[in-house]
Length: 451
Image (cartoon, rainbow, N blue to C red):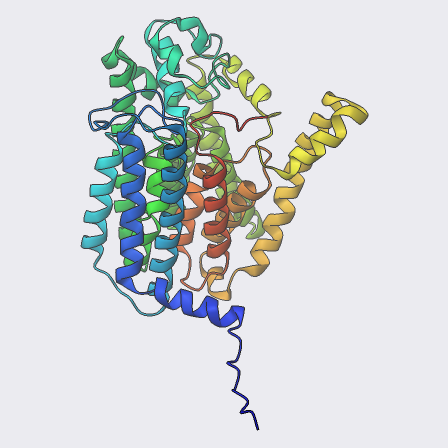
């Protein structure tokens, strides 16, 4: 008689996922993956120029240029390691891991200083910033002229997608860019480096304010200053969104205090300054207004809106309202991949590009509102203790999910809000997944991802 060997019970997907989560949640594993992600990113920046960096070498770009295939593997590996490391740290926090904030801040500062002196990776936006600053420093109007008109090494660094586009950023952004370009002069690399350093400083200052404001400072440090995924997107990419997020955080902190006229005026001024960098900061103002309207705090609505509007008008008065014109053209862009891309493919041959563009322009705000409402229903009950932060969180996250032009660095304000909300927040995983997906899709320094 042949003995029947007992068959091993199959490992379910749930059990496998639990086992993987257990491994990732081990602090040594999570931190090691995070460090690996930053080091791989640094390798890409040190081996510039390549297919994933701006074509410039900064002081720490000391390695020979990486080949196209190698740079792609390095960048994708970096983003994957960053995302897994961050996931592991968040799981570890849920299981009781409590790292010292000072250690997290020191590690994050080291990573930020390293990345800010390497060639910008993943995005070519900082080259556009430098070009707009150079135009302003030369006395030209960056809202009428474009980088191509420079005819210099500045123009050579700008992504083809933006070479013939005037600035879509606010006057405050232009002044920052102009200051860097005034010092940099003909040395485009120096202008870019100064912008990278300023952005790094803004990132660290924002992190300091966040850990001093959040109830759980360790978690706040993990979600911002020691967040390898954000360091890769905001610092290594040199994005203005860092400044925007910092001002929005300051506005949220101020708005959560007593509703005095001085607090409301300060909140409005901070939001106006954020809009003076990127008009998308208006989403934060919309979130604050929605909560105040729901509470029927009409006086606070009036004060905050008036202060914001006056600040924006004052900033734009230096250039005039024509500075908003480039935003109209940029509003019709659709990034790849995007659900709106499918609508464009179907609509352009059927009803024409103009009608399809109009449908997208009307459709995405409605989609953002609908997604924000659904997300708000998913927030845990303790989030009601921070209604202002909760509303801004779901609005900014919904925008990242629904906007036709969505980039991973657009999620910066959502990460700040997540750090201010209760620990048990299921939407944090949505934010992590969305940021990781977009980071993997958009890491070629502006080559080949625009429609």
